[in-house]
Amino acid sequence: PITRAQLVAGDWTVRAGANMFKREWFPIVPTVPAGLPAIRFWDLASTAPAPGKRPDWTVGLRLEGSPSGRYYVSSVRRFQSSPQGVEKIVRQTAELDGHSVAIYMEQEPGSAGVTVIDYYTRKVLAGYFFEGVRSTGSKVERAAPCSSQAEAGNISLVGGNWVGDFLDEIEGFPSGEFDDQVDGLSGAFGAMKDPHYAEIFMPEYMRNEPNTGIESAVF
Image (cartoon, rainbow, N blue to C red; front, side, top):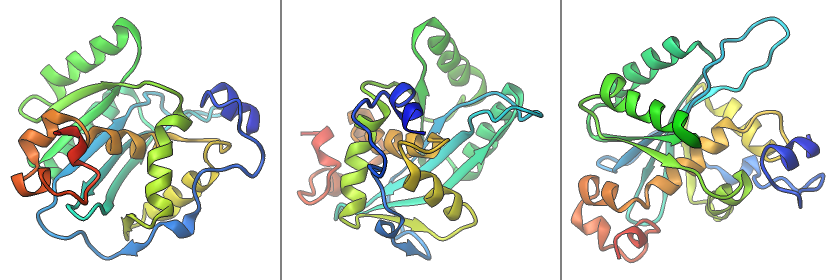
């Protein structure tokens, strides 16, 4: 696991016992306060499970942020499927979330990543706010802001059957076998700082609220 964190997550400083999250940092709440802007961030994998294979998971994590600087993970879609199966679930999830939820997706490097984002824009998520995001830095670097917020008790989880798997994975990061849900959380957290998202989805009073960590995208 330590070698995996070094090679895959790009963190050559990781040591045994140096995981970035603790499960007790995440309060469990029954619901999200009404009216908060939301993002669904997708980290795609397109390999169906098969004997002898343990492919990565496709994860769509929904994050909502409040003007007080509190964040709520309200839903996680986590599954393994073929490219066609992934497309159908991503589209269905958008329909269930509704047009008030912004959709972001990690864009893989190179022309293949551009092609995937273009296809999802035109074919899968036409009619929804959707943007691809190019990742920068290592997985550990991208997760660091979330780790700080979680340790401060600012990231709550809405109770659901996904919570156990989420806590198991995030507590093991970056030395665990999988990190797709961590990528979803750090991706959604970063997307909330997108000025385009703020201008469209965040009420004026939230963009000007001095206590939230979101307004830095606007000012």
